[in-house]
Image (tube, rainbow, N blue to C red; front, side, top):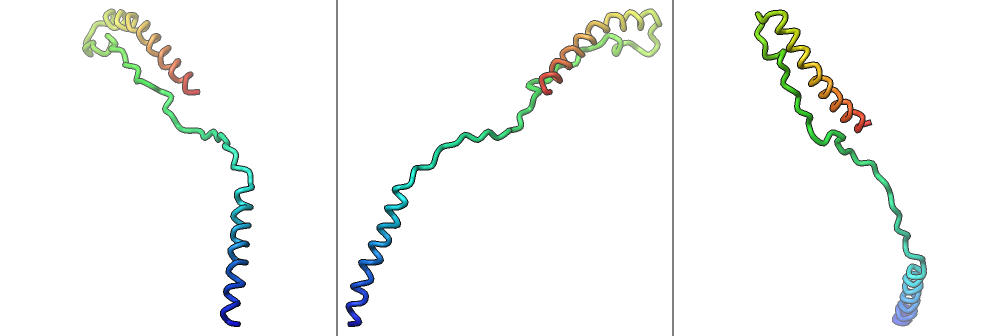
Length: 93
């Protein structure tokens, strides 16, 4: 009688395992979902070169007229540079 018990139990275990495996196959496959994850990217792509101002090249003992003319010539360059910097900053916001 001892030898008949394992022979009766093993088929039952196999059938229960087969049913469990078949139940897993009957389930619908998982649905692919798209998840958007924010990733940091630098907003400044390239450095804007700083213009060389004439006023910076003047000597300390330059005449007042030379300083005023240098500032007058540098003003458009400075405004252009500021405009480019503001455009880059606006791209970051």
